[in-house]
Amino acid sequence: MYGQVALRDRIVRVKLVQRTLEFHVEGNSVIYRRVIDGNLEYECEVVSTEAMFIEPVAPIFTPKRLTHFILVEFTNNVVLPPESSTSGYTRIPVDIAVFAVKGEEYKVIDVFSENKVKYALYGPKNEGVIARYYKSRFSHEVEGLEYFKEAIVPLEVINSHDKWVKFTQVLLDANMLNFYYEHSGKACTQKVKVEVTSDSSAVVEYSKEDVKGMYKARKPLKLTLFMPSFRRTEMMWGI
Image (cartoon, rainbow, N blue to C red):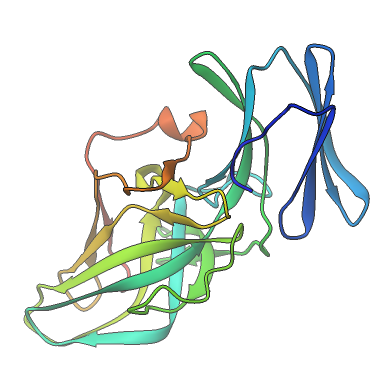
């Protein structure tokens, strides 16, 4: 379950994939526990919180924050002729954050992943970037989404180059991504447009429009502090 945790009972348990989140209400405090296979992974006490939420966030916080990039390698390549375009979807992993909220302020009290976590280098060793790495398909239908583990990314790909190109991967900046969810565990981002400018470079643009009919997830403060005013990034070392 994504969304607000109903703290009406003394003990509330939320089962995700492998992990169960427990919320023990004791006086004006909530004892939060993350449990896997009956074993305690993490515990903390939250004092005087007004509400608690479970929401999807960018997959860059586990086991600790190393980067703000996400690299998706397609298991199926997309070949485009000059001056052509296509639209579809891919999937990225998500981290799951537990937020404590009081008034207009909120705090991440826990963040974890239900995925296996892997990182890779995008670009040359001396100037490339570390990115959270994931393999996924480029598809024209939303299919096979793993709830609480993945988010859908709507993609528009435009080939502005004067030659045929092979689109094999996309590099996303987590600072630019917004996440949206349904209580069921479904998650997605806003639309992303990739304009291919050569056989090895592209410009990635992130829509400012919210996804209708879904809840918008909070951003961890570490991301909001560095949110740039522009909504474009570049892929310079391979598409």
